[in-house]
Length: 131
Image 1 (cartoon, helix red, strand yellow):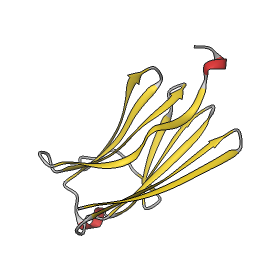
Image 2 (cartoon, one colour; image 1 turned 45 degrees about the horizontal axis):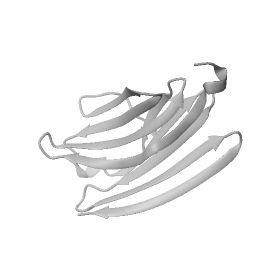
Image 3 (cartoon, helix red, strand yellow; image 1 turned 135 degrees about the vertical axis):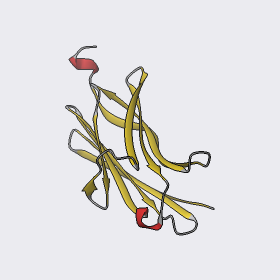
């Protein structure tokens, strides 16, 4: 691919929350289209997340410049409730999303997606309730 094929990160699957009951894991996940490969940073309540036994970020190349991005939260507790945010960046631009998670009963899942491409800001917010 050449410079003309470079693409700013764009969500092709918006950030969402998924439960894995077998392993007691909550997975925050999305898929982005980007070239070159983006850098990903996760934040919890505005503090950068580092890989631990409890929190495991990952990025997998799916082919065709698509990337699966996830944050796995093992054994979620009340203290893990709050705002999770991710930024996806390459030299062509940025994309950001956030998910508000509440582990004190029903899960409230909301996300905001911000795409900054050539100084044009696009914003979308969605709220979903899961029982």
